Amino acid sequence: MAAINIQSVLKKLSLTSVNKGVSTGNHWLPDSKKYIISHSPVDGKMIGKVSVASAKDYNTVIDTAEKAFAEWRTVPAPKRGEVVRQLGEALRAEKQALGQLVSYEMGKSLQEGLGEVQEMIDICDFAVGLSRQLYGLTMHSERPLHRMYEQWHPMGIVGIISAFNFPVAVWSWNAALAWVCGNVTVWKPSEKTPLCGNAVQNIVAKVFADNHVPEGVNNLIQGGRNVGEWMSHDERIPLVSATGSTRMGKELNKAVAGRLGKTILELGGNNAIIITENADLDMSLIGAVFGAVGTAGQRCTSTRRLIIHEKVYDSFVAKLTKAYQQIIIGDPLNSKNHMGPLIDKDAVQLYLNSIEACKKEGGQFLVAGGVLEGAGFESGCYVKPCIAAAQPGYAIVQHETFAPILYVMKYKTIEEAIAIQNNVPQGLSSAIMTLNMRESELFLSTQGSDCGIANVNIGTSGAEIGGAFGGEKETGGGRESGSDAWKAYMRRQTNTINWSTTLPLAQGIQFDL
Image 1 (tube, one colour):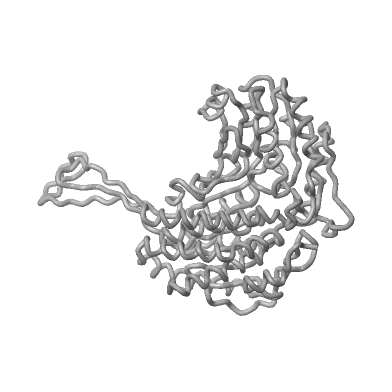
Image 2: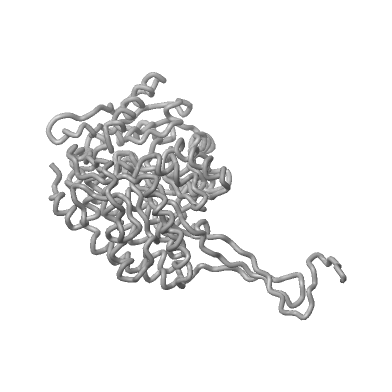
């Protein structure tokens, strides 16, 4: 049993056993009588259900969003930022309840659930400052008495498709930035965590109503794959930000590119830590274990591979296997437990399939996997974190398995380690553990990691608000959350102003009349 009264949590977040699933803000469209049912992977119990959108519902939302954009874009950016600031305050007030719901519906530990809500708060803080820093440039013109500058304008409707592993944080990364930039948002949450989407919609709706934000600035559309397909093909949505599998991202990108729309894609990760002979092994152990088993290996930044120098391989693997014996698995709402369940039984099957695939290729399991049974594991979603000695070229090692399977392998030279690290289709997060400056600087250089995130002496997981989050290759290439990622949510415009009494042409062209 979960260590919380889930009914009181649902009540606090204005959720019931049956919930409407389509909203333009404070207005909820009629119940379609077709539902997504949410079961907790913690105990297998039904939490509640939400109705799914029809094509008619979808078009109603988009029409409302278009009208809202025409008004919202005229609100000064700092005033839009003030609304987002208040949202941050509302999230602070609801942090405990929302964090508990995230933990219970998704299966991550309560600390991680609360941490996810904290990410929402942090991005609101970031966006507030950003609302006064949507800078353009002034440039010198080759023509006398002319001035050139650039400015940034909102794009319109931003479609957000989020994944189950971060059911609220990734939405906030996109929404907070999109709103201060003057856009409106349409959110399709994961069908595996629908109640988290409804809970957030309720929190935002109150803040927006208090500030007289137009209906349609913040929209929610619950549904399955079909909703994502509607969004990807809809020319009324100039930008779609999607988080999920590489397969999904490729299909979506093809559809959006086919209409010359824009995408922000956050797709698969196959992240590695290089542990050199010069590493602090105790520190490396913490980073590796948390990276591999945190969120039951269901982070896009989870550590999948350890590339270990041959001189420290045996000693570090011994430390690692000993640490794995100490991992406590169970109800993620119990702070004594280190690891909770996988999201559902389909994920469990993929985990089992990956173990078998590794064995067939010759992988040797140093810590065995398996599904846990008995008291406390009734949902059938709890698995053992496992470690396999593998070769970099194994097909399964090249593939991202969203589960706590860790592959360990040896290397001789730092150049070899970097080559192994880079030789996978994905390019999200990477790390090196070393006290040697030459090794760390090589890893961070153009000859080093080819990932969007490259860390030294910290693990692969734990993205921080303020830094641009995203990766290369099959990870998609998009950036969210920090740095100048806001530019992806806006369109650039170059302006030339002639304040002379003549009209000189560029490049000295003469055109006399």
